[in-house]
Image 1 (spheres, rainbow, N blue to C red):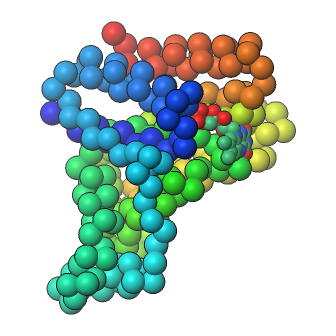
Image 2: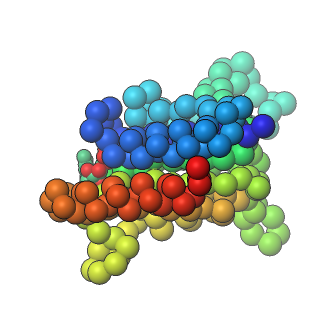
Length: 204
Ligand SMILES: Cc1cc2nc3c(=O)[nH]c(=O)nc-3n(C[C@H](O)[C@H](O)[C@H](O)COP(=O)(O)O)c2cc1C
């Protein structure tokens, strides 16, 4: 049975394109496999705190040596890491804010990118520990970054590929809905294209 982790990170709860298209995709995945388990993690509606000195201290203290306070300090991160490890399929709704991911998604990344848990350093360099998982990222962007001059400003796909890949999540499909601030026609074209891509990714 497949476990799907569905992460949303738009601050908007109505009118959000990334929420809408990830919901469409999840609906199709569930239609294809009704028994699939879907775990919802909404990092915008239920924001995660920034890392603190105490939490970082707990991360770098081996499990056996942690105080009760450190166990408590690391518990949220532990939950998020466990959620990620348990997932076979990860679906991320990732709006572009200021040329990259939202700060809410960045906070999630800060909690799950953990040495010894999701990556480790070896004598050959860093190795990702999250292998065999399929990731689909649905972006939503006001401008266009897959072609033209905007490409140089894309710290969104490039960043997500780098940090997810660092944790071993290197089977990533990006589905971009872009040009969403460029008029009704551009929005309609983008959403039609995204819907078609979803249908291709999960045939009925
Ligand atoms: C705070 C904020 C920052 C944004 N920054 C950018 C940006 O740098 N580049 C861009 O193309 N669009 C930008 N946008 C537009 C969003 O990417 C676009 O509205 C997208 O649809 C938001 O995702 P959502 O529909 O899921 O909420 C920004 C929107 C907001 C609210």
